[in-house]
Image (cartoon, rainbow, N blue to C red):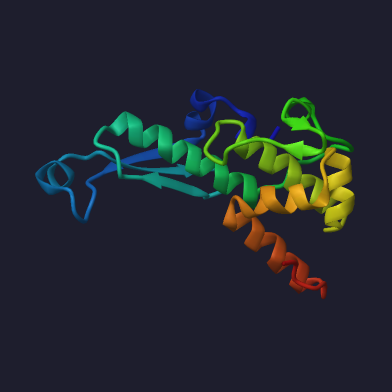
Length: 165
């Protein structure tokens, strides 16, 4: 089970949560109150952080979402699925995926996409077909989260494959 698929409470139990003061502009409130949050996933060492909100709770929610995104890019699931799951199927219409990168489902969809890409040895058209979308939709989806797109490009380069546009 991928850590991204866990609810906030279960994921938070696997994390060390550190409350700190924010830095930079924001006045007295930002500099005197510990509203910044740094969340470290203990099993992997992956970190998510947030400090732009005025409340600890809002920053915790944002830090957990950022942690999920980083975990989605860094951690591959095992065993790898053969085809797209129900979450993907609910988001696809006419071989197009529709989701905003700030939606709560986005990190899990990113996990599924990256797992398919790895399973199919970085053959993006084959991964797109397995996910039920077009190749251009998969590229667009991956580009909506630059760290995921960069990871794909780096892996392709390290394998002697050409960079994608």
